Amino acid sequence: MRAPMKSFLHRLCLGLLLGLMLQGAASAAAEEQEIPLDHAPYRVNNILALQNGARLFVNYCLGCHSAKYMRYESLRDIGL
Image 1 (cartoon, rainbow, N blue to C red):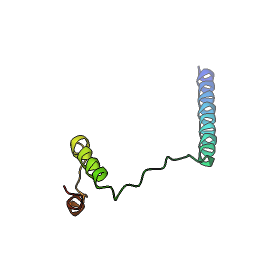
Image 2 (image 1 turned 180 degrees about the vertical axis):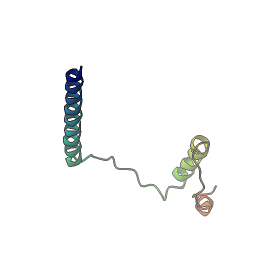
Image 3 (image 1 turned 90 degrees about the vertical axis):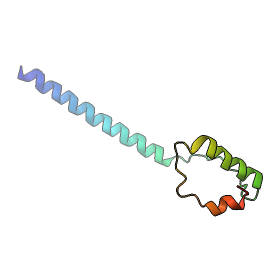
């Protein structure tokens, strides 16, 4: 009964070691790749776009996400 248990532990250890080695190789390969990012439009001078973004945040996001770090002076600047 000891031999099957020892064989199982050997296979388990080898499987774990192989899994860790493959995961390390995949991580190293992933670090080398550059991920292309989309260019975000820069519209901080567009008052209508800022008001629309603030309206969307209040209507859809504020229920779950806090606005405690929001500068309220900036909302006044965009007419809200």
